[in-house]
Image (cartoon, rainbow, N blue to C red; front, side, top):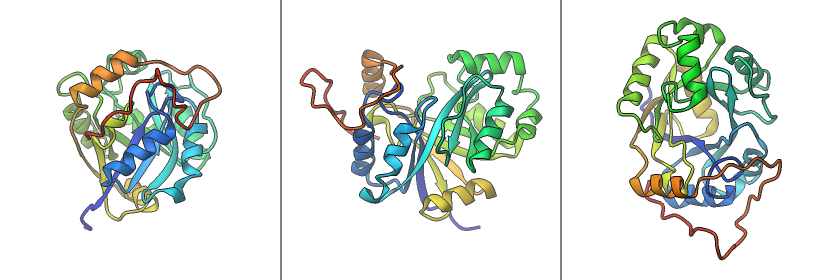
Length: 251
């Protein structure tokens, strides 16, 4: 087996949904880190911010994947390599099918983050933690086995155990909402490119590593968190003198 040398952070949010920083600021933060080969912008229930980033792939040394995080009745699903908005509120089988219809990959995000109502609903009503075959039957390509935004001790360990039970591929992501939390959750894969990552997920040759957000990033996010409910977003910094300062990249 080829040693996984590529590093990807495929769960990143911007101010287009509930992140604190613009798309440009998050991309520049990844560039400052300098150790990532592939990233994905995965704002909640929209793709326009990810497409804006994807169109600027040539400006950076890392590959950019267009993506989204879809809210559904049973949890959250990361859709990678998607270019059109996926309707929210559907059962996860329908969400997975919609992602695959665009040629994308469907990843079950943070399956045990019970502090999120949609995830808690899926655990209690669908019971996928004890009937994991339904995830295989739904056609998921992978499960997020490491999420750096986890707040409950042990849930990443539980998620990775869950991955082994299902036999699906594993991914890791920072779930970054600040510039300083990028690179906290990593998907390792053979190769360096986005195409290599895609093949690794399909082949089951990924592995994960990472650490939780630094306390200063948690504080920054909780103090300033907001949700953009508009159809519009600002991809570039607006240089507002009252805006919180750019976070130091500490991931």
